[in-house]
Picture 1: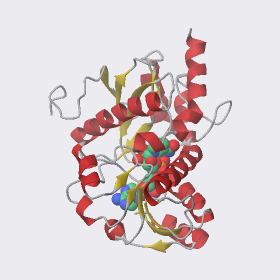
Picture 2: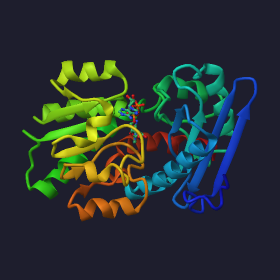
Picture 3: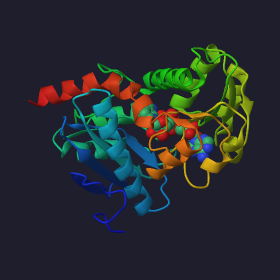
Amino acid sequence: MTIFNSNEFYDHESVLFFKDRTTGLKAIIAIHDTTLGPALGGTRMWNYASEEEAITDVLRLSKGMTYKSSLAGLNLGGGKSVIIGDPQQDGTEALFRAFGKAVHRLNGNYIAAEDVGTTVQRMEWARKSTPYISGISEGGAGDPSPATSFGVFNGITAAVKYKLKTDSLRGLTIAVQGLGNVGMGLCGYLHEAGAKLIVTDINRQSVQKAQELFGATAVEPEHILDQDADIFAPCALGAVLNDASIPRLKVQIVAGAANNQLEKPRHGKALRDLNILYAPDYAINAGGIILISNEAQTSIAKKR
Ligand code: NAD
């Protein structure tokens, strides 16, 4: 794979590769744009099928962070990191300490935080090697996910008001894909607001929890796109809106937490052509980054 000719390379400022033999760390940090300030963005740990897949993900995610911070009015740039490995088995303290050392080499130009496959605990291990970690519990804002859930809930409410001309979610059916830190919290808000939930996750325990807590209807992951619902809320991984999935949608609104929902920019137009309102991920999932932005600014201020 070539980087400069990649479709996902949008004049990123830096793309850095780190390998640590002792701990098995393989990480990539991409800094997309620091015009507004140092790049803040989470660290994703995932069992990528190939290095190409990891590079594509980090390039796409870091660009999205530039949009997210600038739209949220934060003095921060866009960056992101990925660790190639199994988040269930390989996420040791030693590996995250080694990752912290990698972040430290960038001297505060990139600040890491939690994302899919990483936790507050893991980022606290990384914090032992560098101050440039945000979203830690002691002396920090902690897990950004609850704030992200709340922001997405508000984003869905705004989309409903615009598209369906109502202030209330009562009686609306919302199909939620992914019941992780953000998706489960979002379901709580939606349930409280009187929405009916159709849910899915590859983790059966999470599905059971949503059934018990919110009376949600469960469907298999491969069926979530076909549901007769008012809203589809993608809260798992990216590129879920593509040539194959869009024609299957029966909803009026797509609004969720997952980063980079559109596989390609043209898929935004494809949704519009079907009269489906799309609330861009980087606009409605900024709650968490808004929460941890102060903490990030503090770590930078300490550097000066
Ligand atoms: P998470 O890892 O806690 O949850 C993701 C969930 O998706 C897991 O339960 C996983 O089992 C499930 N999943 C994965 N593939 C699936 C599939 N094919 N079908 C159904 N479920 C599937 O992650 P999270 O922190 O909840 O983040 C969810 C999304 O929101 C990610 O795209 C993340 O980048 C984005 N996001 C998170 C935050 C945050 O504050 N955590 C902020 C902004 C954006």
